[in-house]
Amino acid sequence: MPKINTKLDDIYILGIETSCDDTSASIIHNGKILSNIVATQKIHEEYGGVVPELASRAHQQNIIPVVDAAIKKSGIKKSAISAIAFTRGPGLMGSLLVGTSFAKSLSMSLDIPLIEVNHMQGHILANFIQDGDMTNPEFPFLTLVISGGHTQIVKVSNYFEMEVLGETIDDAAGEAFDKSAKILGLPYPGGPLIDKYAKMGNPKAFKFTKPRVDAYNFSFSGLKTNILYFIQKQEKENPDFVKENLYDLCASIQFTIAEILMDKLKNAVKNTGIKEVAIAGGVSANSEIRERFRRAEKDWQWKSHIPKFEFTTDNAAMIAIVGYLKYKEKIFSDISVTAQARYRL
Ligand code: KG4
Ligand code: ZN
View 1: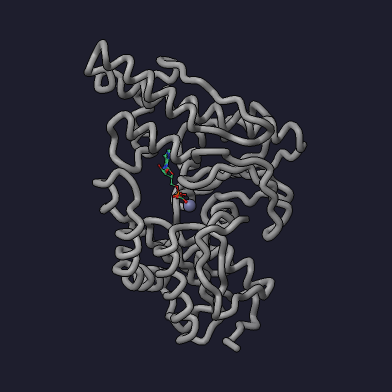
View 2 (view 1 turned 90 degrees about the horizontal axis):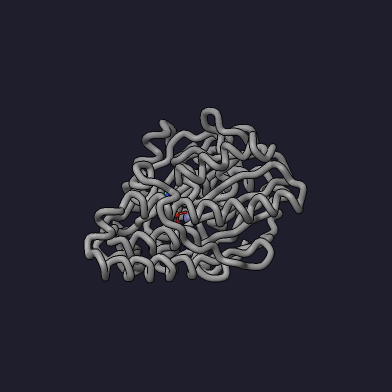
């Protein structure tokens, strides 16, 4: 049985995240961030998407220097760490295996508890990291979880009780950004570039169709086809259409995606009566979505909770915060725990 820190008011958690193409490690002390190091793998850019085999190799190279850097930056000694939290899933199996095996070995060698974390729960509970002026949502709250692999509206009743009210039936919001960007000839991941170019464009320049989907579910595959056909048609008349209209195209695409997300969220708030609302996941780094979310406080009388930019895209601080919350409840994992590519909330 590993050492358990009985002083529950002095807990240092090392978080490790390797679910996709970012290798990350973080130290959190009693919920307060001390360090959060992220090594983003550039290798995938030239392939137009994440190549799983290359991702796991890069994790293998990055994991030790990244964990080392997170411990050094935090200013603590390795011996002060109370437990190791790691992403068990969902994600790419090869990538998850690197973080899982590393976390298991380190917890054994330091003789401290191991804590498995669901990556999506990490995105949501990133809203509880203490850093600067971040506000903590009150239970129950709704979260719009938007990432490269997921798009969900989740009702959060407490730290460990979450219910998915609706989700995408095809592409995730991040895929909608990245696939649209690919059609425009932009490199992977295209989401941040669409965001950047949209700032200089007119969001009403082009109109794209919004899907009709039941309840709180989403669909983005129709939008992608709509954009593709529209551009193919325009390029027949003007081969430079995309180049000449790039900023307006980005602004119009971003506007449509933001509208689709906000429409469903507004509905969920209206029907559930829950007015504490948070966003989470890589796409919540998007400036238009963040701005609309902020405006909703005034326009729709919500209390909006927006994580700091660095806690939106994949990072280990969100894994460490879940580790801290689980540690306080003494929820630990057995050393026989295995990575799980498909792992529901
Ligand atoms: O949460 P995340 O880092 O990884 C997953 O768990 O999937 O999300 C990555 C997704 C990518 O699709 C990326 O294009 C998108 O988040 N993303 C953005 C922005 N920053 C990241 N999409 C739109 N605007 C951004 N600023
Ligand atoms: Zn993620």
